[in-house]
Image 1 (tube, each protein chain N blue to C red):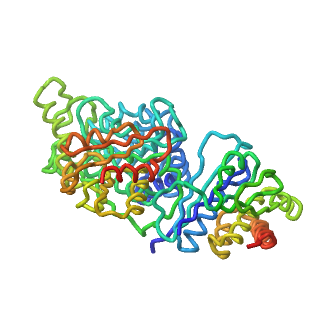
Image 2 (spheres, chains in turn yellow, cyan; image 1 turned 45 degrees about the vertical axis):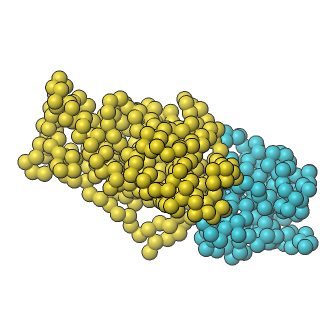
Image 3 (cartoon, rainbow over the protein chains, first blue to last red; image 1 turned 180 degrees about the vertical axis):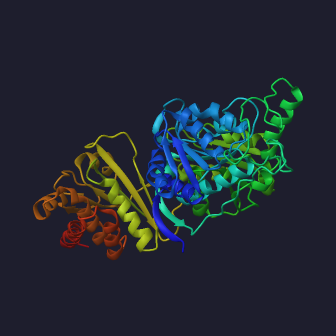
Length: 366
Length: 179
């Protein structure tokens, strides 16, 4: 029987991870994500899992990568400054095709910025923050329920694509409490294992190689250097490098329409809000209050890879309004994909957009 | 109907817990929707603390309190920082043993800290007295729901003390209820 609880977003994130079978958490506590680590520290030992508080976030993500290679579902949680420290090893996880989940409860940056205030300033960092070309998946919960659901789903996506998957929440969603329906069980995808006779980095049709779990008889070299299908470093061959990096990008980008996850309201609207995370709640209030079919909403649950095909679902749209708790990071991406008018509504400082302000903007445009 | 409640007092009074208990009562025992938030800053114990809960029969969309319908104010600094802007149509419950000011709106005076100390022997349950008074005066959640939510939320061994505090709150609000 599913049950109802009244829970904080960060706790719901940890519960969603546990329900998805996460059995390793390595990290370093940081406001406003700390409750996730606290909850995992209390709960993981009771389900046969391991919690390690490492010396810093660099080691935190490193321990997660190691745990994942033993076959475990593994995660860390952090915020801006810790996220910056993790960037090098996130690139290592990308290059070694290590499934893992990284939760970022975003706060105001740059640097230590506003530790206790909400922001969405790391949306480009999660996509591009490590060096080199690659692609990842980022999810953005807009409720306590989605903190649970999307964290659980992040593990399935990480295993399916063998990549780091980011849960890009923010202080508002992380710290608020609301109704949570906890299901009996959550869908758990299986990590595809390395087939007999296959080379360790020999990809299948989905461009993802099977996973050789440590301790199961595989001798695999796990390296951040460019490697061939055997996993041997091969850092001077242009074709091996091009082939590898293109596959790392394509395995995610070629699936972007099939993994797209969003809510669409009033697809025939002339003015359309595009949002993700906490600002979605302000937009939902506006749509509820003004009740006008000419105002639509595209709420992204999966933000990266950005599926531009979603924009064409709004065939009458003249204007896209993009409220974000940053200076227009996703608005920039949206502009790249449409010739219709895009109005960013940046908001800095930690407060949510006021629904009255957004409604006034809509009135002007209609 | 959306009801916005703002709680303020000083750190250590259980201002955040008060909002959590009311939200929990609404969601888990009255089958309503609620969102609880708080000012989450580096305030030290003793500084002004603020939390809020929004209760609705339908899912709560915008999660932040914009113009509170009800205030529960438990310290003078809390009044000055978070209560002084109360609209005319709001209702404010004040802990009259600690708050000297009075708002322009309807005010219900509950000497919660005094009663907690003198009648129950523990200052610490003043917040539960205020919750009892809040529920009695506004009916924002049911008495059964708030009782269960209090029992869920207080440390083992203090259940009876907290229920007594809640009943005191109901009594005190009953005495002052004048409308």
